[in-house]
Image 1 (cartoon, rainbow, N blue to C red):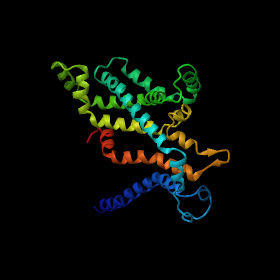
Image 2 (cartoon, rainbow, N blue to C red):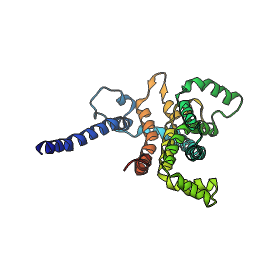
Image 3 (cartoon, rainbow, N blue to C red):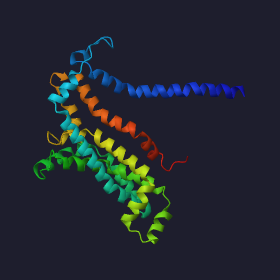
Image 4 (cartoon, rainbow, N blue to C red):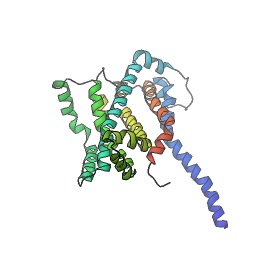
Amino acid sequence: MAVIDQTSKFGKVFWPLLAWTVALIFFFPIFWLVFTSFKTDADAVKPEFLFKFTPTLENYTNMTENYDYWRFAINSVITSTFATLFALFVGVPAAYAMAFNPSRHTKDILVWMLSTKMLPAAAVLYPMTFLTKNYLGIFDTHFLIIVVLSLINLPIVIWMLFTYFKEIPKEIIEAGKMDGVSTWGEIKDILIPLAWGGVASTALLCFIFCWNEAYWTVRLTTTDAATLSKLIEGNRAPEGLFFGRLSAVSAAAVGPIVVLGWFCQKQLVRGLTFGAVK
C-alpha cells in the first residue's frame, strides 16, 4: 500500500512538471519571436543581457505603413478560406463514396492519394511556373494559389473525413435511402450533422496548413496575390536579415492563426478524438 501511495505522489508531481516543461519548450520560440519584435534591428543581434534594451513599436509601425501588411493579410485570408472550402467541397463527397460505397480498389486509391504528398515540391516547380506564366496566364493570381493549396491538402482532407465517416453506422445511411433521400440529402442532412466535429476539425487543420504554406505562395506570387509568407520572405537583403522587422512580421502572421486555434481548441480536440474509445 505504501508503494502505491509513493508512486501516486511521484506521478502527481512528475507528470505535471513534465507537461509544463514540454509546453515551455514548444512555447519558447513564439515567446522569443514576440520578444525580439520589440527590439530594433541593432538590438536584436547584440549579444547582451536578455532584457537590456529599450522596447519599441517601430517594427510594427514600419510593417503597417511601409510594407502594406493588411494587403498581404487579406490575401492570406482569401486564399486560405477558399482553398479550405474547395478542399471540403471535393473531399466530403469523395470520402462519403469511399466510406459507404467502397470498392476493391478503395484502399489502393487512398494510398495513392497519400503518396502524392511524398513528391518533392521542387520537382514540379519549374513546369508549374512555366505553364502558369506563359500558357495559362494565371501566375500571381488568387485562383492559382487557391487551386494549388486545395490540391496540396486534399489527400489529408479525404483521409481524415474518410476516417470520421467510417465511424458512422452504415445502417443510418441505408435508412435514409429507404426513405427516398437523395445522395446530396444524405450528405447534407444526415452525414455532416453526425460527423460535424470531424468536418470542423478537418476544415480547421486545412485552413492552418493553407495559412502556413510558404513554398508555393512565395514562388507562385509576386505582388497581386502575395500572402504573408511572401511578406516575411521579403524582409531580407544582401546585407543580411533584419531580425527586428522579421520578428514583427512573423509575429503578426502567426498571431491570427494562434488565436484561431486557441478559440477552436475544444472543437479541434473533439474532432480529432471523434470515434475514439471514450
